[in-house]
Amino acid sequence: MRLHRVLGAATVFAALLSQPSAAQEGRQFKDSWFWGVKTGGLLYSSPATERSGAPLVGADWLITRSQGGLYVSFDQSFFTTQGSFADRDADSSFTRSVALKNLRRVTFAAMAFPMQRRDVHPYAGLGLALQQIGSAAAQGNFASTTRLQIAADSVQSKKTAFTPILMAGVQARLAPFSLFAQATGSPSQKGFFLYNGSSAFNLSLEAGVRYNVGTAISK
Picture (spheres, helix red, strand yellow):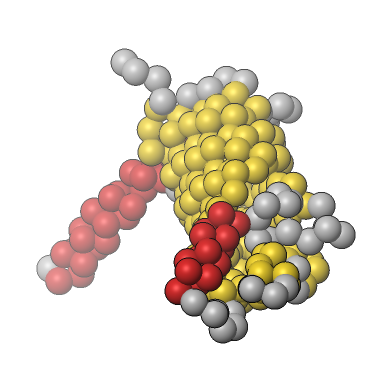
């Protein structure tokens, strides 16, 4: 009897596990909602360094139609580096260093899905990314609280930037999840802390898993 109970419980457990897998396998790539998590690396430059690497983690949301769709993601990169801005005191002008830590990025992109296969789905996207330095602290001494406030305003003005972003990747459907890999590139903005005149682009390579949570078509 104990063996029968164990076999019965195992059968029920296997049936429960198979339901999400079957649902995922039966859903098409088009007209779907995907939620995903990702990791990877960011290749960035700043006044203090050129083409440095930083680990990246994040989550994304993909809505697909037959030929196109919508992509939204949030990610954070982890690094420490130095930025700078033009400052001055009563007697001279100089470049003040700023300690920078981490980068947050929110991305919105319109997607295209060329050369689709049953289980392999290439894609490309073009959109806009909001990038923000997690922590930026001006270094050195200040002659007055007024100079300190001016420096804080200068830091704030270079802490955040909007930039166009280009994406290319591929997603492979498995059960119960889909795996994906993608690359993104965005031009360096001169008014942003992560700007180095000799490096025109910041790049990221990302990989992760997405789950099809259901249809994107109202019924």
